[in-house]
Amino acid sequence: MLAVGLVGLWRGLAARAIILDDAMITFRVAENLAYGRGFVYNVGERVQVTTTPLYAMVLATGTWAAGSAPQAALLLNLTLATLIPLLAYDLGRRIAGRITGVGGALLLTFAPLLVIAFSMESYLYVALILASMDAYAARRYRLAGVLVGLTALVRGDAVLMGASMLIYDTLARRRLYWRLIIPAVGIPAVWYLFATLYYGSPFPATLQAKTAQGEFDWLGQHFLSGFANYWHTWLTDYSRLFYLFPILIILGVAQALWSERLWLILIMRDALYITAFYLLGVTFAEWYYAPLMPGLALLAARGVQFVADEIAKLATRIIKRGNLPQGLSIGAAAVLILTLLATLYPVTADIIAGHPNWKAQVYPPAARWLAKNTNASANLATIDIGHLGYWSGRQMIDIVGLAQPDVAAHIAEGDFGYAIQHYQPDMVLIGATWLPEVQAKGWFQAGYTARQILNLDGLDEPLVLFTRPEGVKVQGPPVPPAQIKPLNEDFNRQVRLTGYQLSQPATGGGQLHLTLFWQAEAPIELDFTVFVQLVDRNNAILAQGDSKPQRGFYPTPSWQPGEQIVDAYTLSLPGDIPPGSYDIILGFYEADNGARLQVLDEAGQYKSDHVRLSDVAVE
Image 1 (spheres, rainbow, N blue to C red):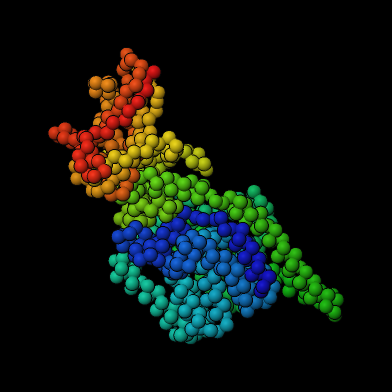
Image 2 (image 1 turned 120 degrees about the vertical axis):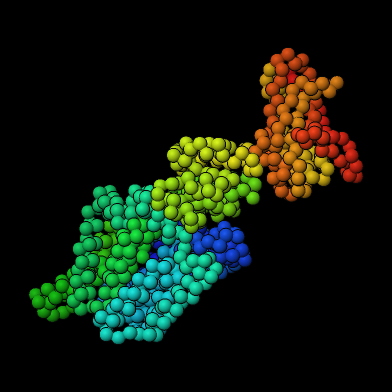
């Protein structure tokens, strides 16, 4: 048991870089819960976004100790990676024997479709499936019921485990264990009651969204076709030895039907799981297959034990004495298990080597850029809300419906523009060629403007940030501090000009680029225009560039106290301007009447109605 536990920990450490986008959704919910912002994804919106409430609650508790939900998830899943093979060993040993236990534990540890789900709730789900089944096999029915109930809080489809136990008790044992049934039903019932009262519905929004995506066939793959693609890849790109698995599983199922009836619970549970996902038409997702891995791994190991037992029987007939038959049996089992592990290992190793995947590479830097360079009050619509939502901290609108329940029905009809058109988000972030049918719509082109192109490593095309015409701050590339000339100009205790950057010397007929660095000090009710003028020594205006801040996209009433705004202006110089030294004057005025915002001195007294930047060189 120590050995298989250490193998599981080693595999977990290797897989720690696997952080799937959907896991980040639960991490954000967990942190909101931990910090008292509600059991929600978007603060203030009571929508059940996560499908795994128990995982979120455990991570919320771990956040206090680990400092963040991702760190808590890493520690939890490393612990579970160690525990899962121990549980698999004990369950296999109880039902069939040590060969089944050891083989099932090792095969489960290296199962590609479990490893690929490392950051998700799948490890907790698999551990609870094994623990509830192990408790049932040990005839500890009350404990089994509690574990089944907790499993149903990890994912709702865990009700299939309880249903399988109930069917088995009814048909095979002709009795019901109420000490199992009551906690198995009662624990999730408490959650569903809470969810109905808190969210208004017992079901997560993601259930509708995934079903709607399947109806539209958005990804082109469903549950069964997705697994078929995996199977085809394993056979063609890795090894034909994968055919050993179905053969051994069939042998294991035969033993279950013949003599070891407890296997029927796992078999029924997996059959119901596959049937439910097929009938719901759920789209493909890598982690949907992880809950099937305990049953398949243990049944394959049971097939190995069957082969080993048959070899021992045959050897006993021939040799008839000594320990050689037993040795041959163990040796045959070891060879088969090692062959299966050698078949699985390259697939698992490649999965681990392929992570962080492109989403985990591209979205976190994009989200951090959004957090730094856009206003915190702006909400964001996008397709993948996991990494982008967690790292940006913005209110999220999910184009495909995970966070807004009403979107799902429109996705089922192929309307991917509904969320944008209905919720009118401040920002939309999508790939340059994504959703072309939406980008081509007149309402989208009229309502949104491309403000920033993000070229990021790991993505073949740039991400484009679209914003509404007004009210969204988007800063340009950061200016090196050495290039910023500091200022401390107070505009009526409302705005402070903290510095500027000027491209000079300029030339006649060329352009002069000026970047201003504002800091909002108080709420600004009036919609001011910024004036920037190049003047000579007689204050004659030679070039001028008046505009609302950030080319009109971020007017002053949108500014929040304490916020910093980077504001760029370009002055086109006349071709006949004489070389020499000039000044720039700048400030704010009301467009309706031309009244300027006054500049105050250190004592708070009126100093001027503009700021002057001297010694601007023109060659």
